[in-house]
Each structure stands twice: as structure tokens, then as C-alpha cells.
Image 1: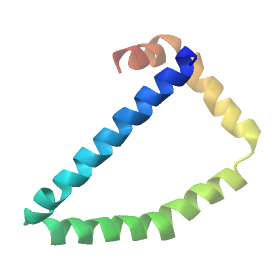
Image 2: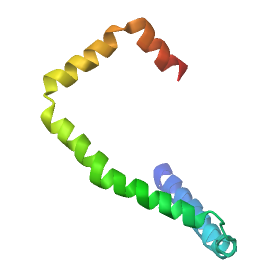
Image 3: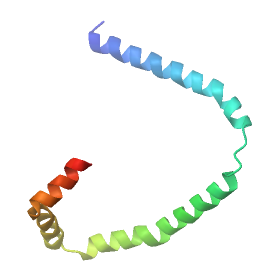
Length: 92
């Protein structure tokens, strides 16, 4: 068998073992109660609604309205500030 096929078989075996191990641990994790679950679900629902009905349409409208010339110019201006812009990227 070629080395590549052998490597893929090893990867598939490892994935299968990891999946079985995760499924075996699921009932133990489900038994634990999360006291913040209700709050987390409410916050997620709120954020998802705001994203779906406000932020996504705004972003799509901005992309349609703003010409590529403006977007390219903004990119060039940010590249023009070489010392400040590059040092921020290096810090990250």
C-alpha cells in the first residue's frame, strides 16, 4: 500500500477512536446541569436575531452600495501608514 493510503487509514482510525470516545463520554456530560443555560440560550437567541435582521442586511447593503474604487482606496490608505499599520500587525 502506498504511504499516502497508509497515512489516511491511520487518520481515519484515529478519528473513529476519538468519535467513539466522545460518544461514550456524552451521557456523563449531559448529566451535569448548567445553572447558566437559560441565560446563555436567551443571549444567544438575542444575538442571533440582531445579527440576522440588523447587522447582516447592513453589511450586505454596504457591500452593494460602496464602489470597489472606494474599498480599494481605503485599503491603500491603510497600507500607506506603513510604520504604524505594520507594527500593529506584528504585535498581534
